[in-house]
Image (tube, rainbow, N blue to C red; front, top):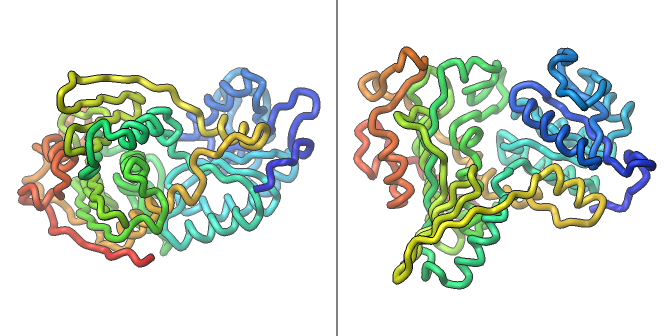
Amino acid sequence: MNTDDTTTNTDAVTGTVDIVLAGARGHGRWHLENIRRLQDKGIVRLAGICELTPLTGEEIPDGLGTPEQSADFGALLDSTGARIAVICTPIPTHTDLALAAAERGVHVLLEKPPAPSYAEFRRMADGVAAAGIACQIGFQSLGSHAVPAIRRLIEEGAIGGVTGIGGAGAWARAESYYRRAPWAGKRRMNGVDVIDGALTNPLAHAVATALALADASRAEDVTRIETELQRANDIESDDTSCVRVTTASGLRVTVAVTLCAEDPGDPYVVVHGDRGRITYWYKQDRVLLQRAGHGPEEYEYGLTDLLENLVGHLTDGDELLVAPEATGAFMKVVEAIRLAPDPAPLPESAWRLLPDEERRVVPGIDGLVAAAADTLALYSELGADWARPHEANEVSP
């Protein structure tokens, strides 16, 4: 990748890197705060914000000044001369915006999921590679120092031979969550793929992290994908679902999630070995090692921010943490979910409404999510009477 442009799009006096943020509301507010943090460190400068409706002064955090605003992403990149674009826009727009940046030689931090289909992902990944720009995919959990630490434990045989990897995410979302944007909870919109489901968006980190710990991040590392997609909410996409991936090495990776938990908790990934297990709560960067002949050992790790890593990649040659190819296996899972039958609505007897919280709950789902991660079984195999028998998708090389 071309990372030796140290004059264009960089302030020659301060050495800061100019940034444009596309999508500054919703999750984009987190990016605004993160950019402010890095701007306070003198690393970056927010040069522009791309939104259909400009942000008010009250919506821009103190300390970010008055960045240029425009609804025209390409024109904003041209006028600001930004070196990095952070793209936090609706899923179907990711590929076109990333390629618009690439055409201008602008490097990209692209929110997850990188695309709504494998074809769109390939168009994006091939396009940015051809342009020679750096592209970081926003799986922040893969910036945790816990990930290489767990890999070292596995390589050292701390838990013996790895027998499988499970992931569990029991979260809760109010019905208003699906009204936050026109594309929320949709599988497709106006004939365009969206695929905004529990496994592909809010709990996508569980899938991507489990695959990374299985050493199966690339598209060619996946040979078989089984999905079970259900929904308690009145939406198109899944809110209670599980997936089992078989890797090229024969390892099974099962991730079970719900947005209808009774008692929501932190998602985690567990590496099963024949002499122990490693549990990783990726939002806490916390690791628990349990192994034969030892007491439990708990560790907490630091985190490398992905935007800061991208800047370091451009200015100091730091290794990029989450390049597009490192998310190829995740995108194969997205593709399997896209091609699967539409999620089955759960019978009304399988869920109840919590009026005070205005959210739907699936009784017993918390235990099923944990059991799936423990046993690598799917909901239907665990005896959930509402579960649709799984759909298998053989993945071609």
